[in-house]
Image (cartoon, one colour):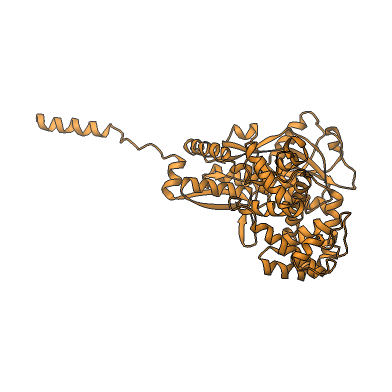
Length: 452
């Protein structure tokens, strides 16, 4: 063998023995940006992602859209049927994140990569009002308990079973917590476990739901990120910190949850009853006024219920009258000759509300404008202007309802109102007023109009 052939053979052997260097795998964030879409796995429910009036909304929906906008990519929602399916899908890399109102638990933390916490809930035992109710943990074995399979509820029950060996439950797969709450309402189930935010939303629709007690302390909700997504986790944390700092997270909480803080069973039950007994007669008048002044008729109906419980001859101790409870002065300004005539009252009240809305400063945006105008309908626009001024003095945002509603009650305290143009006001009243209207409005929007 010649020395040239020997060199060639050695060179070829050397090449064969070397591994070809592979490029490092791309992180999830890099993949998201490359394909220009963030794939979000979620559930179809009232606290996550649902359709209303031909648009998709929900706490998780809105949060995911904001994050995708920050990344500069499209968002694609994949709606799955169960928690089990969602967890299996993220494990298989079929999505980039899970935004489905899932709890960060110790067991899940050992298996999945989580983003930052964004809301806190408690697991609650929910039964039906009027039935026998458990009062403490040791009572649970005496009740038929139901939960969603592979949920944080079931994880918690397994923990409790170590302390209460006789504890048993039935697991449902492929259904939502809302579905189980409805089954409680119709007496098909005895008791279930559900997160407090889901219960708060749904007992407006099913007022017979009764919260017995909580079985956990507060637990955080957080997104799950696909395996290998440390880069996406880091970017999510960076965005979330700024999103929270700018007050946008508080805006979302205000929009979806803040008006659910208090629950008046008697009032809500009466409202459900009057939807079928009183509303049908007034419906054409609300629709006519809504069309003329470009408002959702259900918002006007909700406001009217808070004012008069839909009673045309209603009268208050301060002599405001009618469906929309107009003062004599306001009625005259709006061209209302007979405040007890429901047609005139509804049209006049809507016209007045429209005038108030136009007087809200342009810096106040979107839904906040409506809440400001409703508060002004109750307490007067002058006090709203005073509250905005006071909000600035206290370092709060005068353009956000979630800040203004904390300031309005201060108008009854001398150390605050003595420096304001319009003086004293019972500022807690417009706060309650707006909260109640938002409650009634939510219920009406979920109501099947064909039943009216």
